[in-house]
Length: 240
Image 1: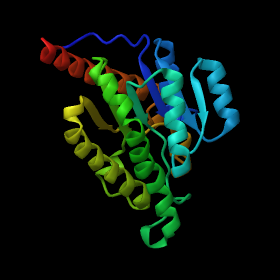
Image 2 (image 1 turned 30 degrees about the horizontal axis):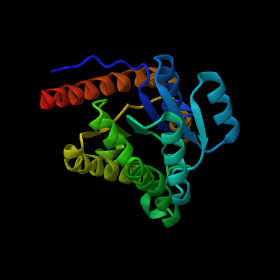
Image 3 (image 1 turned 180 degrees about the horizontal axis):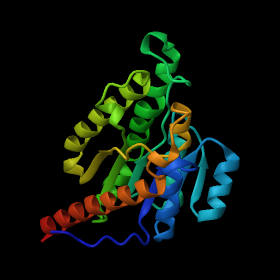
């Protein structure tokens, strides 16, 4: 059973929301009438995107433990709860990309801190709000942005690929564990995109060969719609 999902009023949080895929998601979700909160590190960029989209901007770093609970509190307070969390913020690790043997321990730790541990901490911090949304029949969903580097061994992408592989497996395990709470967790690979992060990794890449982040956002929002439709349909069936 599929239920039509109306994005009007849907409460969504997006990390890394001022550039690339995150910015495209904030723009498109806000345009569809969702209530959006987003997180990024640079105050000027947060202010600009908030003014442009009407979304609620939070200046913070998901890679810092002390920022997580303030993020979670601001998200839930300003949205009145939470239906969808999109863990999009990502760190490459060493820039320029480096072989693992040439990667400093601190560079690997930095990638893990944002891509894996930050996503884990923020999801854990808002888990209760998501469970409440599920009980209310709204559906509850966490989307973790992954990469083909999570499954393919690319030379030079060790820190990033290892962190994304760990994130994908963490997502799969948590999806199983969260079923009793009515929460879905998905790891989605948006493909190679024309974003500032990709430009940092591959400066000489031809942008015309890369996917526009706006297109990737459309695809992710459609998968979000499908996941929420299935979840709310199942909840309706259980209640009947």
